[in-house]
Length: 96
Image 1 (cartoon, rainbow, N blue to C red):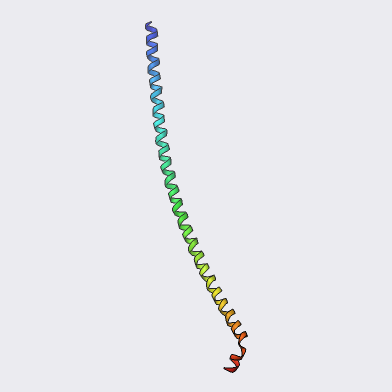
Image 2 (image 1 turned 120 degrees about the horizontal axis):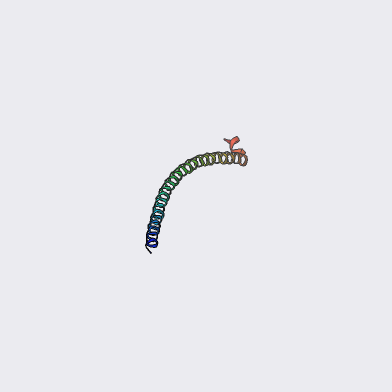
């Protein structure tokens, strides 16, 4: 019986050590996962800021191009109106 009792105590101690080891590894894994999550979040935030800046730059470029096209369109419309006015009233130039 004593041999069995000693063996059982050793088994309990070993089981307790294994449980402690599993718990320690679980805590380490949790801490590592939390660290990686924070790093990933920081990286996403950085990329988001970069993307926002790029979108802003592209928007400014598009706004400049649109303003240029609107200006050209306005100039073209003025030229067309001027030509049409001259065609409709050729006597006004001759009379003037």
